[in-house]
Amino acid sequence: TMTSIGSSLKFCLLAEGKADIYPRLGLTSEWDTAAAQAVLESVGGSVINADTGQPLDYNQKEDILNPYFIATAKHWLEK
Image (cartoon, rainbow, N blue to C red; front, top):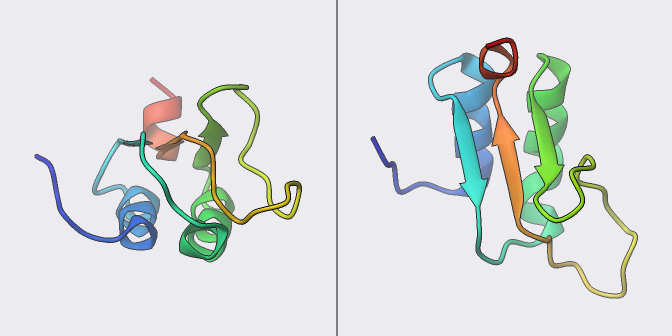
């Protein structure tokens, strides 16, 4: 099922185990994802830069736009 809510709430659904994966192939800003990424990672999930395969990082570029990313729940990673 697709759900139309903000990125941070989608990260929280992943953290709760109510969703498996959230691929984001559109623009978001660092402030849209930073806190929710910390919550998701604290329960074993991950947020990966779709281009590099590395964890999404912050304050590393001249602007605040995120690259495309894939966020996953811990239980999805264990499959």
